[in-house]
Image (cartoon, rainbow, N blue to C red; front, side, top):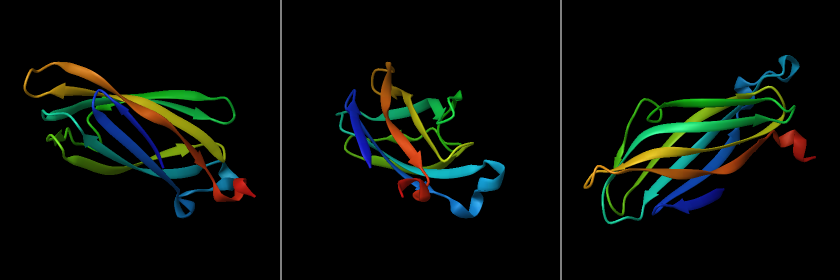
Length: 128
């Protein structure tokens, strides 16, 4: 698991290779990731949008942007956390993701970025 705190918000990421949804012969490797967002601020925040940078080990790169996460724009109260699971497909056995969330302080309506730490997605057989 990797974690990072920025702007008073801690983001932790765990990754899981999804063998049942992958097809190595077709260069399709599916990974799931569980993200926990902890609000260490004294005010509630709303996750407005996400911006991902996705790197495949063959040198390919893509960006993904969108509102919220998994169809939600969660409000995270002071001292609370929010957790979700999503996924990413790669064309190689390993890759990396990192990004940022655009958050809003619900007291002041000020928007700010929270960094998502870089995390690796590696198939178990690549460790051998």
